[in-house]
Amino acid sequence: MASICYVIAWEIVYFNFIPDFAEKYANHLIAKLQASGASQQKIDPQLQELKNIKAIYSNPLYNVAFTFLEPLPVGVPVALISALILRKRPRNAVSQPVPQT
Image (cartoon, rainbow, N blue to C red):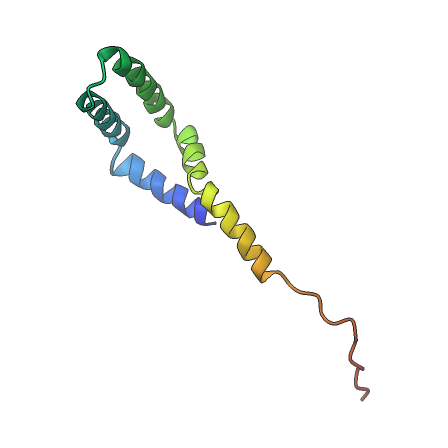
């Protein structure tokens, strides 16, 4: 449920409030590469990869799928640990007599 709420919130924010997020993030990464002194030969493949990712991320179905994958590495172990802690324990095998009325 938490993952579903996260995905819905992200989709609303991404497509309504920051639709240029992918472009700004790509520009930030390219600027970071240029500041580190990377050559244009190293930057060009990164730029192409970022363009491909931006194109994929603009499709709402792929966007939902990738966004849903983000919380899973934390969510699955937390859910499993919670299930182990909160599981029902078997009652004692000795049954109590039922009072007769």
